[in-house]
Image 1 (tube, rainbow, N blue to C red):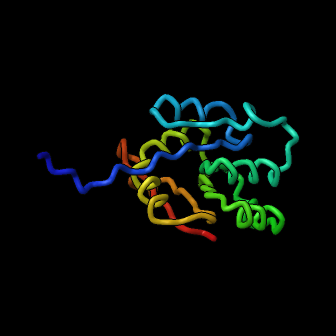
Image 2 (image 1 turned 180 degrees about the vertical axis):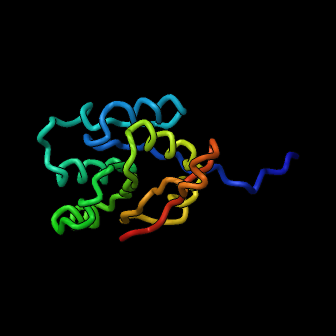
Image 3 (image 1 turned 120 degrees about the vertical axis):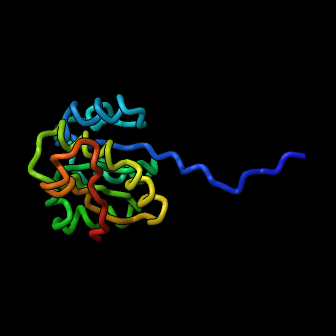
Length: 146
């Protein structure tokens, strides 16, 4: 009789990219093999954040945004909490391509973070330090925000 492995497979997460991340971020994430739902595939351009946040929570997706102001908007923050959303804010003054590449390089840390933190929450995904940016493939970090 074969002994079953005690190691668990990490849970599968589907990432939802907010409209502000355009097409580049979801394309790069999909190219890296990550399951991605893109804002424009589900919503119109003027859809309020509160509406897509509710849908993200209902579908148990992980929301990605570059909009750090969402954390300070009381209505949006309340929606994140009530809809039990996992919201990751991609931090940094960088192009969409750079943000996406950092996310891919940091995905192991992101998945570990997601496995350790139950929704709802808002967390930040940082790029590596300027010194570490010189090296290729250096991951950023993930920190709980709210």
